[in-house]
Image (tube, rainbow, N blue to C red):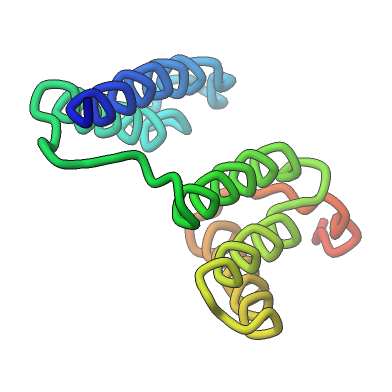
Length: 151
């Protein structure tokens, strides 16, 4: 029976990869429309890697794995819920606040002291935001912090 765990998970991840890949095609066309690398390039590459990795899990499952029904299983469910909430709150709360909450919660669930976990989340959110906005010139949503936006 344990052979089917990887296969079930692999099929679910293939479905996710297809949905994610389809979602990348829904991005608006960049101004000019002639760029070889657009906003969908990196997410599309992630979808392809996810699909190939998942296909490997379906074709060659691990012979000895069982679903973690213990504390590990609960932690995995918490992580999935945190990531879903992160995606839902990214636009209204903004990148920095959402990232602080998500990274902080995940660090805390992995055993960090709550204060250090959320400080790590805040630093990660600010650093990645600054990298994307200024080094890569890619805008991330500010959400509740939109008053910080420079005109």
